[in-house]
Length: 128
Image (cartoon, rainbow, N blue to C red; front, side):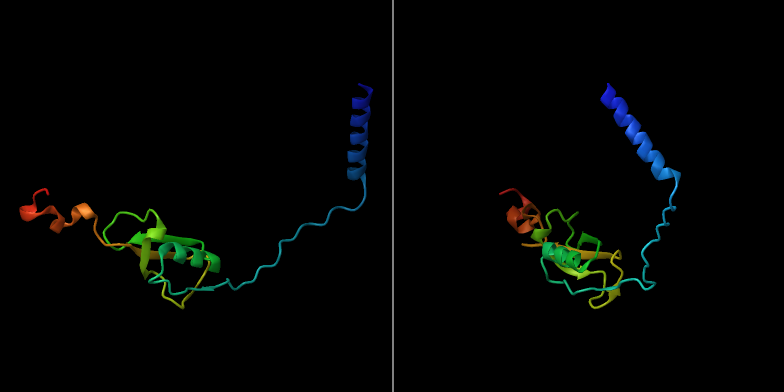
């Protein structure tokens, strides 16, 4: 019990001596920021694998990149299975890192699901 009281007394003395006198702490000033925003150059990723294109844009510094479809499918689930066909930002243009870039992708291996192919249904659209 004596140790606890001695420790509390020591903490009280040290905290009071730090607050009692001395010079006040200097105010913290934020680091200066440049008035011109950092602009990044958009590469041409059309024809690239979607996963590779995402990685490339991420390494350059773009933070808001979305994938869309251009082949009628609902969503890009695994980017490594898609190829970039269009991009919203013109190649060579300079954008801010948080600018929105949309890559239009098509599924590798065709534009339709196998069960949607009418030629696979056999004669007169019936089942095989």
